[in-house]
Length: 492
Image 1 (tube, one colour):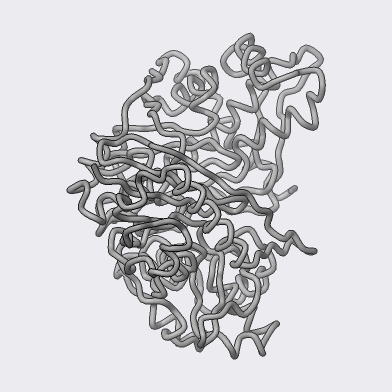
Image 2 (cartoon, one colour):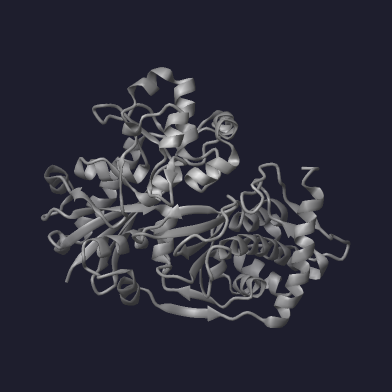
């Protein structure tokens, strides 16, 4: 029997899991860390923190599974997108990495639009510019830390740094390259036009390969330190959202996954792009060779419910289980109460950082259960916005759900009713790490392709059927939901 190892290099910790060729998760280990939250919305981290935590988690998982020390065939890593690691000519880290959620680059993002224009940017890289993307970070470094910028030899992503430390080779994969705002998603190469416009050398950027391609083999000294008796192949892996979608079964045309975590995403498999690109959804290269995924993102999904419990309900509601029970007591539409979930602004479909949350329709008769259900419904309407935009690029006929919406029976029903789609809950709870393991298994030849990998590893736990009558009611409420934003956007 063969085994692969999947790593998820997240914002607050790293996780590793071992997957067998029979499709079973053998073990999972994790190490946590904390990014450096600085003033003015700056978020940084020393890449050495990631490497130390990755070494610890790999050594721990190998020590606990010592019988597999010569049976790990391949390793693949998933990592946070957009975060930028700056290396000098000796491949040493120049300064702390600037993370994906850092907001220092508003000026540079504005300059990108002034120099390129929205329409041309969409033609060149098929995505809008956001503060968290890599290009604005490079421009910020040149403007604010010119001495550091002069030292830059390569700019890579977090998981690429781990792959470099494991193998000594510097490359990135298409899914992470797509998040730099310098990569032409359709042509699968860095945009020479943008590089010329911003006077950047392509040599600064890593070679790009497919997610399933090999970076190299683990260095012998690293293997000895971590407890590997054979040198596993390091497969490129991918961006966290790409790996998460792979790990949640999105491996062919017509499939999509709805994720209700702190934020909310809808990711759909796109075979080819025939629809006009508007920038309202992200279009990124996928972990499956020669494919793309469309992704709609809302910024406050599960966090809206966390906020309600933490700041509004307080000690009056003891647990999320009790919140679910109270939501069950409310009728469809929450007795006229509508919640706009824009607690941090919004990305999809409006890209409006000034948007804010609203409770519309409060009265003296409003009950706790109606407030809770209205938050669930408002988030679900936000997911519908994302879903509709993703559906412009692909006909979606199979929808998986993961995260908090999958765990809450009432919330899952609400999402199914609002989307008017059957939702499938899978036996997957470790999306990015699991997806990375599947990429390692396909890349190393353990599984012939992703359909085979899926059939061997992913099973249906349950389905959530939509209620047609509820959907009709929600369609009317959704019209009011969208009007509330439109009528208030100039007031935010």
